[in-house]
Length: 262
Image (tube, rainbow, N blue to C red):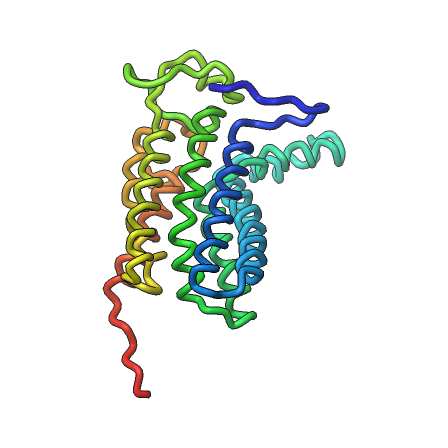
């Protein structure tokens, strides 16, 4: 919807801008929640940086997995690549994008490893994660809408893209699935934050997030128009992951707390 910004040959997309705004807002809110609980903000800042690294790696890896056919083709036709520059260009095409679920899983794994090594309060930090993840995602999905990197199916109700890098998305009226998801993420944020303030479901808010987000994400995938996200058994990669996260979330939410003998 909005053209990219070119600064000295470096392309800055609206998605990058909105993701940075969302990340900064979520980070500030995490620090605010940490201070409210009188915990060390430095631990939170370092944890956020570690999580960002996990998000970056996980998001790109899953994007590569959704492009598995292209990766296999590159390997089987390796000799046709135009030297090292050709290899780098092809790898950039295969792993150059980001998939939210890959970033989510990568960020959670990186966070868990750091929290465990530093012996921090897992329940506290993952509760904070449950609050700030949908907050960040609400901004990021607006960035997706503005960039046209993700788009909905053709629809009488919607918007027509002009500047999407994906040519097939342009000049077609499409349902604004990203804005719907952004609004839903904002509702998740408000609801989980309300529970957090009341000390409800302590230590289990991240599982509530899994259930709330994965359920709607599974449905929204049916009205996505970008069909390059990888499919298996008629379901997209994100739908398969949604099923897994939904099951994990439900099981952990109904799992009884351990009774202490102390």
